[in-house]
Length: 115
Length: 419
Image 1 (cartoon, rainbow over the protein chains, first blue to last red):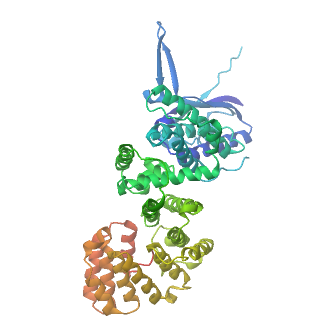
Image 2 (image 1 turned 90 degrees about the vertical axis):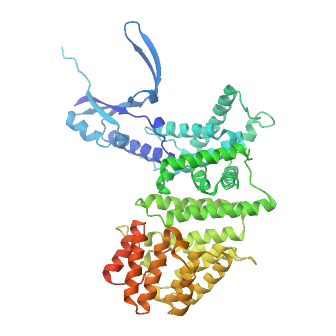
Image 3 (image 1 turned 45 degrees about the vertical axis):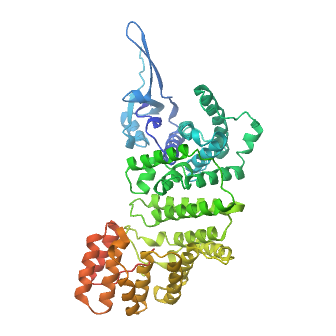
């Protein structure tokens, strides 16, 4: 088993004018997805991120404060899971609830340093 | 695994929160209130992903109370129109506003605000669905088969009217109550009809609108001053119609008329609820149009088969309804009933009083009725001509499919009693 991270990229709910009904149904899908991973014993962690960004860039360490509305896409959160390989994670990622919003799951493997 | 949340929990709570917060801060701060409530649900949807609270409703109510402080701070920072929340209103008083009975009271205030005469009648439904029912602009647009832009404009216009007239957030008293109640009942009736007659492919949207209308009508019945015969009558009518909602379309979403409907699918508990409400509704000298419509709906439900329908009784109720509410659509229905009972002379007399334009978008029903009339009186050429006219004017795709099917079968009789 290896460790992978699923990173969620795209639009934030706050910028999409979503209805309470829509929010509830998405929340329930997220909840079910998380519960499914937990039951399978593969979930190692995960967080949702707030839509505020403080960006520090360049050798002058220029600082810009941004919100999700001002960027094309934003990392909204991540899950850390255990899986056999990329294909296994791809299968799990099929339940991501926000594809219809144009949002994306990026699957990355956690690097292991062999001596 | 934790239990699934109540259906529409967020939507209903959104309406409750907006209403209670408006009662505290006033209608002039509706924008800020709606933003704060929206924010609460976004946060809940993110944090509940991992773990749902043990008592979700209590969680949301607590969140709403916290919003009181947030909004107060926002307004203070803006320094304009700072509400006099500190004048005699302490934390205990605010807590009381979050009691169930007070939440219902606040929601009623919002319904009555939505139906204020200062608001354009076209804007009332959108405003009510947004503020009382927690629908989004997109959901309202799809429910009313209108563009989102149009709904946005209607909401803006409604808010502007509320601001310009400096409307107070209350339930009118005395004579004003009766007048405003008429408008409230009409809006609830229209919301229901939008759902019931919608040709939206989305079955859920239709059920949601009908359900909302019933829920809001129930709020009126919970409130002492609005426990009135016409409110019971409307509630009863909505129950009777809702009982047939499932039987009204088949699995392919095709419209089924009363003749084709599987009467076993009619929802008995709703029919019984409608009946018991009707008993309360008739404790009065004066009958409203909802009384007559409910009586007609009840008569249809009483018949074990379509053939058992008591047309004479239905015709009698329609006469009374037409006297109270002389609308062309009632006249057309009376003509159709006369065709059913083979009173062709009477049918013709009714039809002669009508022009297709009288029925606006539903002119196809007029042509279909004429087609029926001619088919029954053995004038096949004229019947086909009228049916073609009906097909040319119908816009609702489900209805069109229904008419086409009749045409192919060479069966003209258009059945109207699917309403």
